[in-house]
Amino acid sequence: MNLEVLLPVAFLAGFFGSGHCLGMCGPIVVLFENQRHSERRLDNVLRRLAYNSGRLGLYVLLGAVAGAAGLVLTKMSGVETGLAALRIVAAALVVALGLNLLFNLDTLRYLESGGAVIWRKLSPLAKHLLPVTTGPRAFAAGLLWGALPCGLVYSAVAIAATSGDVTSGALVMLAFWLGTLPALLVAGASAQTLSRWSRRPALRRLTGATLILVGALALAMPHLHLRELPDGAHERHAHRLLPIATPVLTP
Image (cartoon, rainbow, N blue to C red; front, side, top):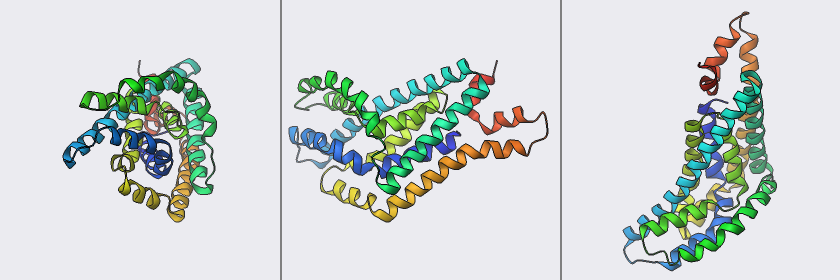
């Protein structure tokens, strides 16, 4: 799937999933805030930026690893088969996210069970980071925060893998992080207001329907374009249509 499609999809998934994020991460944000509160508003903003920068660092790392895994899959299975598989997976995940928003289905829970095992190993580290009194501690706390078992994050990582490229995978996770940032950056009363706005039924349904349509079009578009091409032009057009093939096709 084109990066031009993956980036807005990841951003929308993060933004309209902010209610899910606040439900899962809200208590952690409150814990961090209670550990170190300053009368200076700038100090509080900088601390929140440090938390979220740590979360970004982990997300970008996961996206880069996922993109590399997608590239390996493409090479192992062959360009044509690999691209088809990645496109199908990307479209299915986008549709699943859309169904989650459109019908308020919990389509992401099954992804969280595996991450919970890892989280049980990492969570004891939190006691070494509290109280959060310095910028480096806040950044490290953000890294740990990003490791929470979250189906929404795992879906974004899986979508990043469909980019088939290390840099593109990292950019997909950057877009997802940007979508989640407003609600988590202004944690507290303002975040609750933003969460209520993002969870308005009409907005959720519109975004869900849009994501389903994007997933369906992403799956069908390459075939529609290829049918219109004369014989012998398919490979050249595929190179332009699917930029994720570039690292594989280039000698």
